Image 1: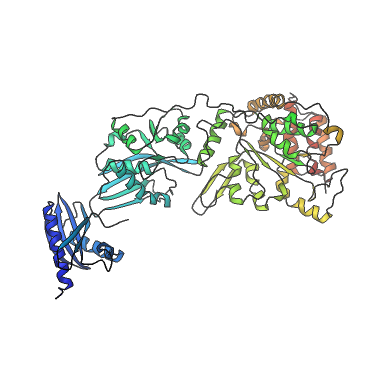
Image 2: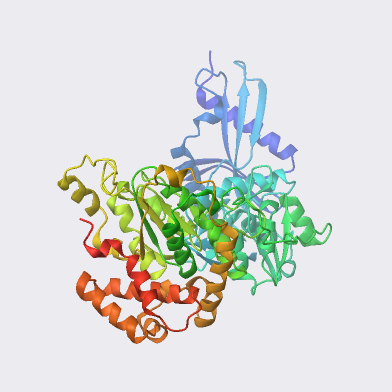
Length: 123
Length: 510
């Protein structure tokens, strides 16, 4: 039976976490509940807080993973991150928002993982 | 961390010192510019980001705030790319604030980090030379700014080289101005007054105009030589003084029309077509770029087919002819541009052109003639000092072998008259030291008439119904004629010649 979308998503997040840890990031939080949804991962490296939006796909039928991060979604991510910073009093250090695009095959094996830095365009 | 870079910008004809402040702080990465930047400066963020990255430096993913101070002047132009980029690199610690002391930076950046030219380098250098000891700008602008004494000018091709120079690892060379700054180019060499046959009366009138800075209206049928004479008028004008040359170069720099590296050495001659628009003549509507009347400053504005110009375009001439400057009023601010030129207007006496021709018959109705001439308003006509009729030459005159006097000989006399005026108006600036620009008090002081001259003038006023402004003009023209004659006092023959140049006042016309 085909596993649910939630399962795919959770799988992708696990893989993203493993990838980050292998690159020297320390994970601060997972699936943090925020006013506009949730923040998939909050990590830290070299004093910089990194918020991660993880997008997992098994097929390209609905386009590449990152194209689903629309302008509205960006605004929500931004608000969520600001909430987190305020909540845990972390406004005194550098921070940024990254995205990780995970492509899996139908069986759940990793096909590719793409880490994009700094996806928020602030003006 | 905070960094401050000195820069400048141009608004209208003036340059202002602008402090570019850059603050890099914590928070989600952003990059914003405040201080009333215009669209081109707001767009520069992406240019600067790419330029910094492609020059091999890291663009900080931090909260970047750029302030262009003073914050209440609307900033225009793209010269801020370089100072902002350097400010960002200074705020992240790559460049120390002490290394930026005494430096002025301006320039546009392209995506690969190369520096591109910007408008107004010369006026910025002039205005800012007291604020810094060195000016770093794009190579193409460097020579223009090098003409300013008291500041070292460095021209640079890339952002990377600027940083190397500031850090001291690879200093740039100082750019020197062209050796012969006011080199005479001789593009007027092929035009000479001796090319024009006959028309001695007109040539004399133009010599008076050149000597005293008076405006001229040439009236005559088609083919009588009006354009030919007008185009040769610049050949009898004295050369630009260094002060005048700087003024002209300033204006052309702001207009983005500076082609040479050195100062402009020849008097500008502008010949706009009669279909020109209001904005092109007076100065830009949305963007304050100098118009034709400012580009003709310290030179000649030649308007051929004078009545064919649109009425509103002709009306733009009123203020410059009166006060030597043009005021452009917009919603946010008012700008003043200098606009002191000699106007040469040429026109036919009627729509078909042959109204005064002794041989050809005029085809126009009186109503047509009236309408044609009334296109030029009374007040505008009143501000043109000298009216010259340019008659059609008959065969004998045209085929005469003997050519007229050479321009150089006429020019020498004009320079002599100019010297007298320079002495007379020693307090005034170079471009105003002409008889034509005397104010009423000066007219009273310097135009002393002999008794006969006064009598003659009185008669002329009574008989010919001359207006007060025309009376004032006659005095100024006769002052010039007396100067050309080497006479301190204005004699009656000077008056009679001057009255002769006011044919349109005499109501003999229509």
